[in-house]
Length: 79
Image (cartoon, rainbow, N blue to C red; front, side, top):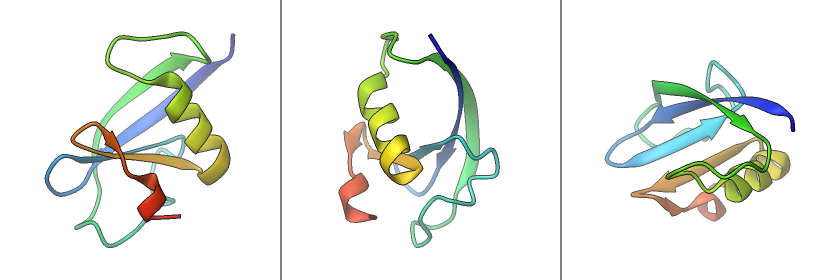
């Protein structure tokens, strides 16, 4: 399994962006700014509590980031 370092950023409300970019520079603008929240290491494909690893990895492969609002995947609004 591949160890993947992800960085989680928070925007307004309950919007979170997840990316491999430690600066969050690749997250879409227009959500009130991004603040660092925490970092997390995932073993590629290994389920973890509260994290849909497949969604994260799929979006990051395709777009470079994953975005949720109150735990609902909303990346389609930004790509």
